[in-house]
Amino acid sequence: MSVSHSSRLNKGVREQYMKLPQGGKVQVTYVWIDGTGEGVRCKTKTLDYEPKSIEEVPEWYAGGTSIYQAKGSNNDMYLTPVKMFRDPFCLDPNKLVICEILNYDRKPVETNLRSTCKRVMDMVADHHPWFGMEQEYTILGINGHPYGWPENGFPGPQGPYYCGVGADKAFGRDIVECHYKACLYAGINICGTNSEDMPSQWEFQVGPSEGIDMGDHLWMARFILHRVCEDFGIVATLDPKPMTGNWNGAGCHTNYSTENMRKEGGLKHIEKAIEKLGKRHDYHICFYDPRGGKDNSRRLTGQHETSSIHEFSAGVANRAASIRIPRQVGQEGFGYFEDRRPAANCDPYAVTEALVRTTILNETGSETKDYGKK
Image (cartoon, rainbow, N blue to C red; front, top):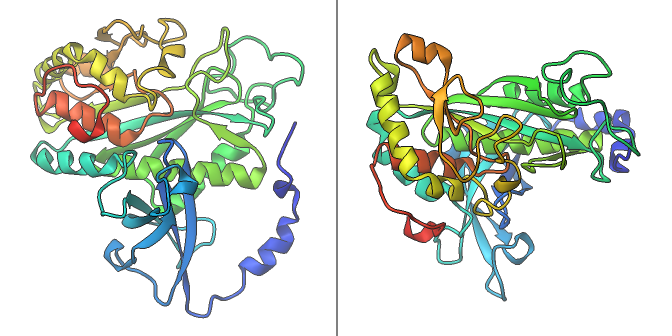
C-alpha cells in the first residue's frame, strides 16, 4: 500500500519535542476553506496569551493567489476568526480556529459561503433550525487506490462491509477511531461513526447542531480528518463517486428540523416543507455540489441507495428517495426528515442555508448558483 514518506518519520522523536514546555505562549492554528470550495488550508501563529473567546483571536492574512482566491499583486486576504476549538494535535492550551476569508476590501470571497449562511441563520433564529450531517468519505493510498484493496484487483462485492468487523471487512479503523477521539477533544459535536457499504469507505456524523454551528463543526471535523490521515500517510477523499462500477457513492445526508417539526403534530410541518423542497429540486441540486451538480450526477443515479438527480421523491423509511422520513417519525407524528441528496464534498454552509431559505423563508423561483445574488 502506498503511503507518504512523512508518515514513516520516527514519531517517537517527534513526541520528545512535543512534550517541551511552551514558555507561556500559545499556538493558534487558523483554518479556512480555499478557492476550490472543498480544500482546507491552515497556518499557525504564536500568541502571548491563551484566548478565552474567539474575539480574543486576532485577524491574520493569507496570500490569495496561492489559495486560488486572488489574482495579481493586490492579493493579501483577511483571515477573520469566527469559531474556536481545542487543538487535539498540539494539545491544551493551543487552539484551532475556523476563519472566514475576506478580500482586500473586506468583502467575502466567492467561496466564503459562511457569510450569507450566518445572515440567514440569524434571520430564522426563532425557528431553532437543527441539523445533523452524515459525512461519508473514502480513504486512499497516496497513489489514489482505495486503502486495503488489492493492488491489481477488487475486493469482494458489497454486503459484509457496512458496519463490518474483522480485518477482511473493515479497512482503516485506526483512522476512524483517532479522528473520533480528536474531534471529541476539540469540542466538535460529533455523535457517531460507522463503516459504509464500500470497503475503505466510512462515515461520521455531526449534530444535532443549531444554525451556523453545523457548518463550523463539520468543516473543522473535516480538517481534523485530513490531519489525522496525514499522520498515517494516507488520504481521505470526499469524492461523491470515488470508484466507478457497482460500488456505493459518498454523500452527506442532512437531517433537518425546525422547532415546529419537533413538536406534537410536527409531521404536517415536515410534509409542508417537503412540498416546498419538491418545487425547488433543481435549486438544491445546484447548491448541494461545489460543481453545480456535475459531481453529484455520478452518484445520484437511482441505484446504490440513491434517488435520481433528475427527479424529486419522498417517502417514509425510503433510502432511495430524495427525502426520507424516518419510520419512527412517521409513527410518532413529529421529529425530522433526512435530505439524502447532498454530495460528500458539499459545503455545509450552502446546504443548510438552502434548506432554511426554501422551508422557512419561503423563497420561490429557479435561482442559479450565483452566491452574490441569492
